[in-house]
Length: 337
Image (cartoon, rainbow, N blue to C red; front, top):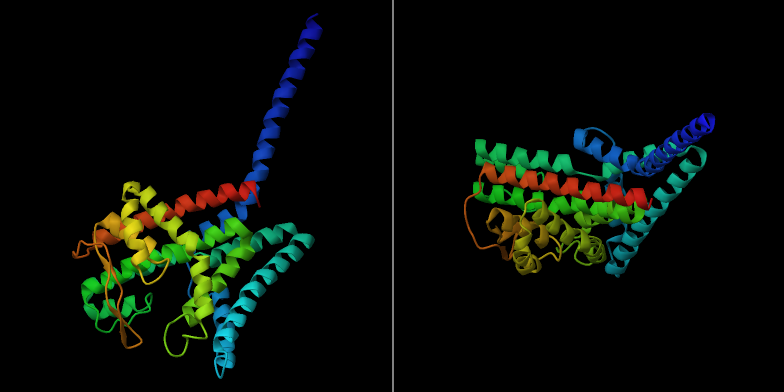
């Protein structure tokens, strides 16, 4: 009986050990599916965009510039611009998907490395924060230095901006580009993997280069601009919600619903209004673009001076919103990809 009892206990231990190992391997397998995203995300947090490194967006820009110079002439400019945008977006998705498929077929580990590298290049969280900090440091030294520094991250004319307008422009850009440079790429990765993330970056680059409402790009870039509006529709609103959530201000969602749609852009107003609600300040107003004044509605009602403390609060919100979205994408990657 003792031998039978000992045998029973031995099998019980083996079964318990096997169960533990099964769950460990099971969850490790799912965790491994998220590792390429985690690796690329952490690389961006550590390195940002190192100057001098090759970057796919630079390549996107060269292709777009060549296409614009070739096609943006004569009749049917809107159609030609739209066809170019669609070809580049779909082509980017398919090319990325094929490269990953081939790499996965011959060497799966290399495919995972490619995904991590792609994620690294598609995110701009650290660089965004670095640039906004530099603006506040520069304008604290002199207005002219502040104008020069903020000109690196905004499209408006900066030659006549006051210190208040320089700080406002930096904070607006911080909120808007949290969506464009971090949350939206993560959103499209969660939905369509790295090919979707890369295709989104092409959409975003097209809009930043030819999506302007001036004489040169009004027709040629209008479809690219609309595609960018569509690609950012959900991410912009998700960004605003995340900003309010991580700062404990979900009760200010009505503020966002009120001022978000008032922005000239169908999307930018949402993260900007979320930050305005959190900081209890006012963004917007008329600014010069390409030498012409462009009227923009105000977001918020409390016109007050901005300080370095506002910048630090905004950066903390950006970082926490990025962390929350990153964790969401990790969970989705473990389940789907």
